[in-house]
Structures are given as C-alpha cells and as structure tokens.
Image (cartoon, rainbow, N blue to C red; front, side):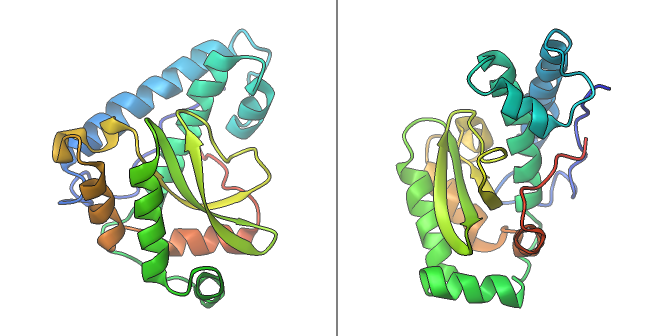
Length: 203
C-alpha cells in the first residue's frame, strides 16, 4: 500500500503572516509530495511494502540512505504541519508543569527553539522532545528524524530554506520569531506527551 500525502490540518492561509499561503502550497504540495513519491518508489524494491512509515525509516537507517532520507523527510513534514496552527493553543497542565521544571517558562522554550534553530548549521530541524520524563531541545541535521530514536518528539520546526525563503529570504531568525510568536500547537505537543510514544504518520 502506497503512502499518501496527508492533508494539511488547516487552510493554506492559516499560518500567515509567519508562513504565506504561497510557501505552504509549495512546501506541502511540492516538497512533501516529492518525498512521498520517492519513498513509494524506493519501498517497492526494499521488501518493505505495506509497512508503517516508522518501520521503513528504522529499516532504512544506515542501510539505504536514499530511502531513509525520503521516508524520514515524509514523516518530519507530516509532524511539522501538526506542530503549527493558526492560533497558538494551550499546553496541558502536565506539559506546562514539565516546561516550568525544564525551562522556567513557555517564553524560555520559545527563546531556546529560536536560538537553536537560528544557530543550526545548514538544513535540518529543531525539536521539543521528551525522554525519561524530561524535556529538551534537540536538533537533527538534513533529513534526519526523531521518529525512530527512542525519544518522544512533541513539536518540531523546519529550518530548511524552503520552509521560509519565499517569505523571509535568508533571514531564518525572522521566520523562527514569527512561528514561535503564536503558531505553535501546544495541544498537539500535549497529546504527544500524554501518549508517551512517537507520533505515527497517518498517511
């Protein structure tokens, strides 16, 4: 069974002005679709047909770089769409308490996400994650992912240039400032925390 491009959980205009409808249209409809298409083509020859995307990522890590890159990018983008929302949602009491313990405040989490994202060399992802009952900011390079790392990712921000270049040119910090201002989906993060295991790609 082929993987499918998941629908955005909001309209193309929902993340404006942080992310324009034009950027979201290209990012979702072109970039994410391409990763899905390439994953499907590569899975056919890897004896992984019908396996969940997370199993494909795990099987391909270290053994099939092309398949791993495209499968991991497919998963990361699906997770990213849900990490964003039209208007910032509220964290659960559990998540809010853990944020206070680990960072002191939600504003400090945002600050660290911005700093780590801005300082990340070249392409990649910055994450809020939970491991062993503790929250941390994590980074993955290029197409790498936390989907199969024994860490529970709660939110991610894409710091590849195609995520922001049409709107902010090469000013990654402006993009990070805009999305962390009021576009983070803390309700999604809370769901991920409560579940206790990494999100599963639905398509």
